[in-house]
Image (cartoon, rainbow, N blue to C red; front, side, top):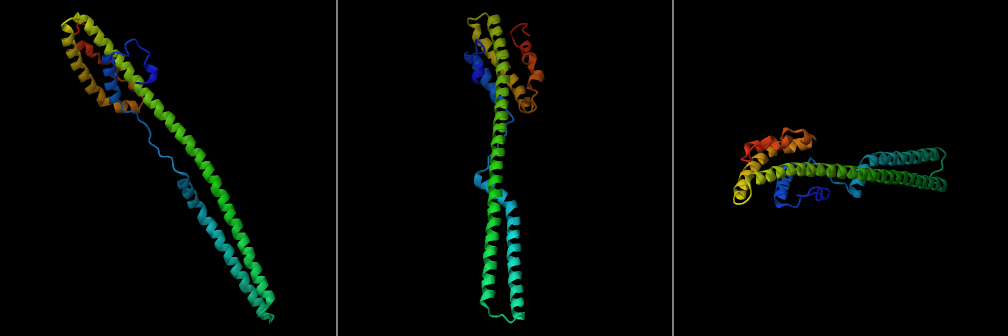
Length: 224
């Protein structure tokens, strides 16, 4: 039972009341959300999945540029009669060094985007997890409050039945009669409880008319 309900009624500790509460609460199925927060590795893989292709394309383009420049250098050197030449070799080495530097810059930009994306996604996931936890707590609390209210109604009918039965040896038979009606109530209650909780209409359901008005079908006299 929820802590907020434990001391809200003078009869909450009575085993009869607890029985009604437990059975009604067990019939309710709060519409909670199950969500598994992704790990950092999973988030990184997802973000890398759409960042990496463009990064690789940039690298390929840069490498292609170097190949074209080296080929153009060879053609120019051949036309000048400069092959073989230390100048040509040195120039090609400088082209390769510039390519490596440019590729390193591309990879650094990729890593920065990846880290930024992971951090933003982690924050989003934390907010989502908090909202889901709050929603689930509210749904569970709604179920507990609904069960508590109906258990109180049932228990009051039970008490009225005890008084009308006059106590003594009749108490046992009154208990049995009430239990039969309670079981009938629970069968009907279970038929709608899950859908009602999911649509937040539990408090407006006809079963809330004091507990089905089923007391009129008991042997408790004119209780309504």
